[in-house]
Amino acid sequence: MKLLRVGTAGAERPALLDAGGTLRDLSALVDDIDGALLADEAALARVRAAAGSGELPALDPGLRIGPPLGRIGKIVCIGLNYHDHARETGAEPPAEPVVFLKAPDTVVGPDDTVLVPRGSAKTDWEVELAVVIGRTARHLESAEDGLAHVAGYAVAHDVSEREFQMERGGTWDKGKNCETFNPLGPWLVTADEVPDPQRLALRLWVNGELKQDGTTAEQIFPVGEVVRYVSRFMTLYPGDVINTGTPAGVAMGRPEPKPYLRAGDVVELEVEGLGRQRQVLKDA
Image (spheres, rainbow, N blue to C red):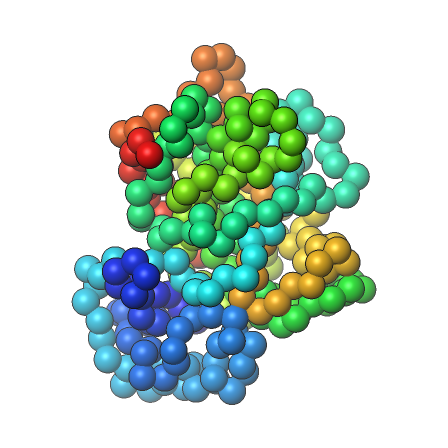
């Protein structure tokens, strides 16, 4: 299923994109697309049955698309998780996953405005595969068990400010948690529709020019292993999100003068089978 949330920011309603591409209203069946729903197999079964019946009310396709997940608990991010991205930045492939956090309030809809922070000279782009947790995960023992705890997948844009991240001391969090720095969506695609998350193409364009053209096959730590690893250090709950890293092609990895983002730039990105985003940048 392709689950999503539509409407004005802060007042989105749950919806579904059916096999024919029609937007369908789920608000009579569920309160929201969130961790509580993803952990409830009976509720998900009711949604699947309603989707198959063709009786769900159609919605205006012009409605704003919000983040496909409400009430996000935490966003765990994996840095330097692609062989080609590590090479372009001159970094050694990490022996263990590099983990940092983004606050849930960085999340916006897939086509919402992204704000260039005040004082920023190095705002960068990163297309990523986002993993949404569907079952509580603690101290998992295998990558296979990790995959079994995934409810679905989505497109994430891990927007980053490299000066704040790398040159201002402390952790990466300063360059990762600026307002609007995690567009998510358009859909949450349930795991049954993604049989192999290590065979997905990822692409990103800036002002129509292709910048990133990668594949999750390049991941150093695949999805199941990432979930297993993170579960050893923190409990993952239904509705938590993991951004699994970005392939080569970011501005930071390019020759000088590096083409960092500015107000007025248009970024478009997609992950195979998971939909497409488009953001216009503005100054904060």
